[in-house]
Amino acid sequence: MLRNLSPQLMFEKIAQEHKPICRFDAKEQGFAAWKKKTWPKVYATLGDFPKKVPLNPQLLAEWEEDNLRKQRWIIDVGRHISATFQINLPADVKPAEKRPAILCWHGHSPTGKQPVMGDESSQEKREAIKQHNYNYGHQMAKAGFITYAIDWMGYGDRNDKIKPNWRGQQQGGRDACNLYYLHATMLGLTSISINVTHGMAATDFACTFPFVDKNKLGVMGLSGGGTMTTWTALCDKRMKAAEIICYSDLWAYFGIRDINYCGMQVAPGLFKLVDLPDLQGLIAPKPLLIDIGIYDTCFVIDGAMLCFRQLEKIYKAAGVAERLVLDLFPGEHAWGGHKSVDFFNRYL
Image (tube, rainbow, N blue to C red):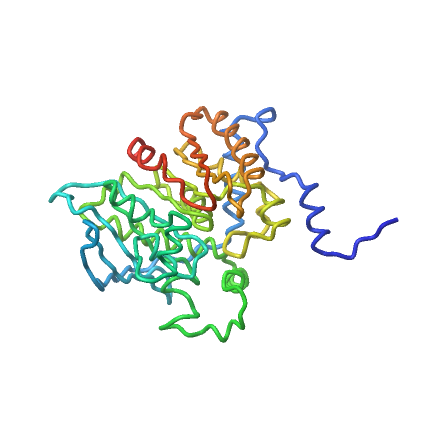
């Protein structure tokens, strides 16, 4: 008898055999009943959500760039924590005019929101934009939308390894996403519940601008930003449409087999309940655009399409198959960008 001494292989085998207890099956129940039963259980895995605090906004800078008006603010997003907030708006926004606005979540990049919002000030940021078509917060503003963004914990201005924080030595080279997840769960929260709360604070602030139509809000993000887009679309009822970019796969594959996830993306017992397509399916009936790169080496096409096909079944069962859109493009881990403008114009 061949014995196994590898814990990693043990987890892979368990994941391969695992069937989430709330996985959607159209033969067993309809969409409405499934969502009514499943969402409260999924939501509970996030633990507590931090309490809202006054925003106390302060304008840091305002400038014009590439025919866009840009502003940088600092706002309070939680107890003992602030975030820098950037908003991009087209220069042709007229007085008293209101435009749809899109929250743009960044991915796993130390530079955080900056390249997403159009910052090309360093070689690192320029390469990220070139490699991942990463400046969607800039491009969507050029297309006529208001876009806004903050950093999630551990990235951009909220990266403990850079100034003004300089706490990287305390982390000993460990992944900040995993450390913050450990801290959060010890306190009954999760990184997801904290980051979603901070994103909702950013949306609260965005809605105070006279040119933002608070009834026409969307959210989009690449990779880890796709994680944040998924949860923001689920938790923030104000979001009317979402674009998940290169975050489609099955947890047994990209998470446990490929070890392509971190504490920012998970919640205790989540995979016990649902797989990723089920989680994304809970977004229905909201319109949802999915970007999948055929040559993506992060979320490979095999698992990505398995995820999407299951998601299709959920949207069909919800009676809104036409609201699920796929941008399948011949590229790597990047924003496809082929259908985004039309999608958000249609649904916002």
